[in-house]
Image (cartoon, rainbow, N blue to C red; front, top):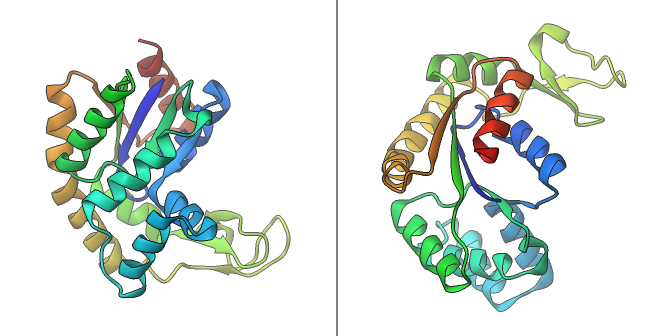
Length: 209
C-alpha cells in the first residue's frame, strides 16, 4: 500500500499517519525525517542538502527527489509507505511516479484530509504543548499539563498571522497536486473536521477500496 498523505498544517495528518502505520506496518516517511537522517548519517546527498539549509535556502526539487528515491530504495518500504510532506509540487509528483515505475511500483491512493481554513486557524491557535513531557493539548486545559504538571506553552508559529500565511502557501502549492492525483484517479478527499475515529474509518475504507 503506497500512500501519499495531503492536508494543510493542523488538518490531522500526523494522527492518521500513526493509525496507518499501526494498521499496515509500513513506514511513515516525511521530508523532515529524511533530511535529519541524511544529515545524521552524513550521506553525500545529506551533506549537499545541508549547504542549502545552512544558507536558509529551500532545498532544490531534484535534491529532494534524490533523497526521497534513496529512502524509498530501503527494504522497509517493500510492503508500502506513507509519504507526508512529499511531493510538494506537481514536478515532484511526476518525478516520484517515474522513480516508482522504474521499480514496478505506483501510488495506490492520495488521501487529502480536508479541513476548512477557519477551523484550522481556531484549532492551531488553541494548541498547547507541555514543556516537560511534550504532550499536545488545547488551551482549554489551562497553563498546567494534567499528565505531568509541566507548563503548557504555545508554539511561536501557532499565532493567527503565521497560521494564515502557512495555509496560503499550502493552498498555492497543493492545488496543482490535487489536480494531478485527480487526473490519475487515485485522489480521495476525506472530511477531516470530525472525530478522529470517523476520519480514520474513511481513511481505512479508501485504502482498502
